[in-house]
Amino acid sequence: MQVTINGKTNELKFNYRALFKVNAEFSSLNEKGNRLKDGALNLFNRVLTNDITVIPDLVKVTGNFGKLSDDELFDAIEELTNGGDAIEQVMSDLKDEMKNSGFFNQSISAQVKQSEEFMPQMEAMAKSDQQMKMQLPAIKKLTALVKENL
Image (cartoon, rainbow, N blue to C red; front, side, top):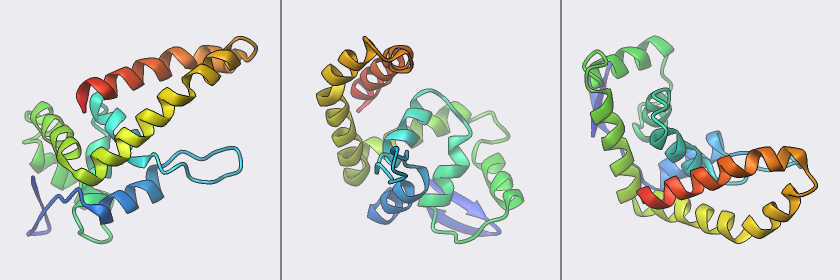
C-alpha cells in the first residue's frame, strides 16, 4: 500500500520499526504508568471496528515520512481514500497488512493469548468490581473479534 505526501510516495511498511513506533505511541498504560506494548492490538481493534481515524495514525507510523502537518496528512488520506469513496477498501487493505506482517501478527497474537490467559481472573474480579463487570463483555467481544480476523 502506497501513500503520497508532498509529491513523495512511500510504501506503508508494517515492519519492526513501525511496531516499535506503534507500541511507543499507542500502547495502553498500566496503573504505574508503564506501557503495556499493546499498540498494535489497539490499532488493529480500531481497524476491525471501522474507526477511520486510525488511517492517519497508521500512515504516520508506517509511512516513514518524518514530521507531517495535519494538513499534509489529511490531504494524503483524502487522496488515498479517493475522497472517501474507497474507505472500505483502504480499511480492508490495512487489516490485511497488519495480519500479514510477522511483527504485527506476532504482537497482536501474544496480546490476545495474554488476555485469554487472564480471562478467569477478570471474571473473578467482575464479581466484586463494578467497573470490571461493565468492561468484561467488551473485552470478550474484542478478543473474539481479533481472533476471528487474524
